[in-house]
Amino acid sequence: MKFIVNALDLTKILKTVMKGYDAKETESSACLEVTPDSLILTASCSQAHFMGKIPHIEIDTDKDSTFYLHGLTLKQLAGIIPSSDTKITFDFVEKSRVFNISYTGHKFKLPIESDFSPKPKPKLTKIGHIQASDFISTMNDLLKIVDSDPTSSEVPTSCLHLTFEDSELRFFATDQFAMSEIIHPYTELNEDKHEILIKHQQAFLLNKQYLTGEVLTLVKTNSQFGYIDNDGTVSLVNFSALDPLDYSPHKGVAGGDKTVTVTKDTLRKAIDTVSKLSFDDEIVNFNFNIKKNILNVLNSANNEIEVPLLDNENMTDLSLSYERTHILNAMVPVLTDEVMFKFGDEIREGTGAYMAKVSPINQSGDEVTNTFIAVMSKMIE
Image (tube, rainbow, N blue to C red; front, side, top):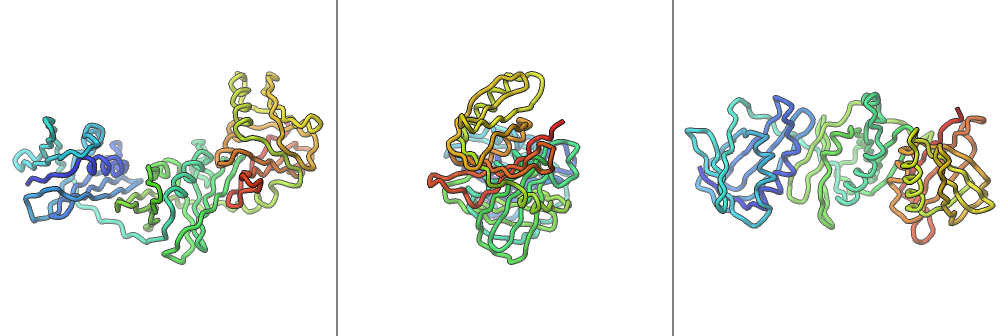
């Protein structure tokens, strides 16, 4: 059997689908289905299932055939085969059970595994359609907040939360000190409410380069969640059986009527700079001086950078301490140039801990309405 495919099509599908192959798992598999119309590649492991197909340029058979291939070799081919408009020939040698792969003077052998039995294809339930830019960029941002501490692996803070209800998709993530909820509209294909928790490692596999205007079809099975992209490629990862967090009480106590507005990049650079000058700990101190209209950002060695306040209302002098990662995580979902911090009263009197609401400010000077962010300062020791 011999068939020819386009190298650009092949490398694209290999780089996506082979994310589902895990060389550390003996049951992980890479399957190639050859039909008279297309080439279908599937890679799966205990945590993921990816499947995509491309058309043939030429084929010399009218029969369907299935081959289980050497996954590591396939992954290596993804980095070797040119991403160009080149013809690649697959020639199956029955006697030696290999594919001879050739193009423009290059020749490779792709071994065929013989000890796998066919796996059932997942039964997909379509949830809805969403802009790829909304889904992928928000997921990537909030994964930076998800608690990655190994001791938290069996609690909901280790998961990205996705809630589908009333044509809105709510993303939520927290590291136990910073938290963010971002809401995007989507087109419902299923009226049921869906609550899905995905651990960081699995959610990371869903990252992709998307086209401008690309729409994803969000899908799930009994144990996996993912999407179908514009090329028809299916990307699925396991979701967690953990119960979702009820973070509504935190939304109720975050913020207040004391507000300050700063330039996001100026504040981030100040935090980064004083952190690099601190060799003993990760603590960043905020001292608000309202008379001078500045925020002093300091480390434990009293290295200090002044950040001008663009605006403040009802604010009083206030001193707070944050873990560097917590305050930086709180600013990850801020996509605007300016950011407002809102403060109320101490969470508990005498603790020195405040739950601040962090609000992105758009060019019109208004708060971005689809984004909720909060961050808690450290308690007085």
